[in-house]
Image (cartoon, rainbow, N blue to C red; front, side, top):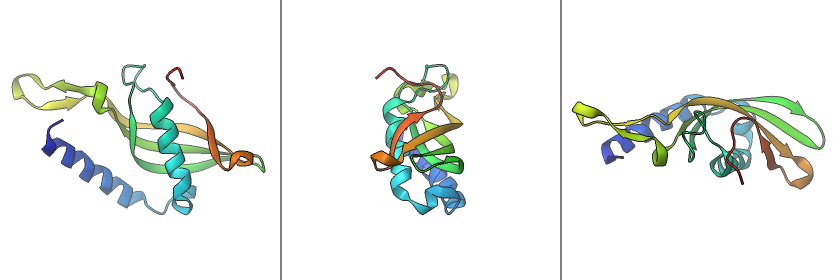
Length: 128
């Protein structure tokens, strides 16, 4: 990815984060956000398994789905990008396009008995 495109994507991601900061359970605990981002990076696939190295760039919304003494389930909406599998040439215009990016939503399950560790995630997952 060209430096100018990377800078633009980072600026847009920062703007999304700034606009959504302070919303939902994530705003209360950065450790939960880090756990979600890490688990997603290690396990997620997007777009019918054509994007196999996606990374969350911004969490745009969270909602508590289940809150029990032993577990917490959060529905998370996020913006993701896969720079490894997604970049393709823009043809005659010479602009690099990223077909592996977008917004999506998944549920993340935290085990409270294991120190709020993410133990599951909905949606497509790569084999461990």
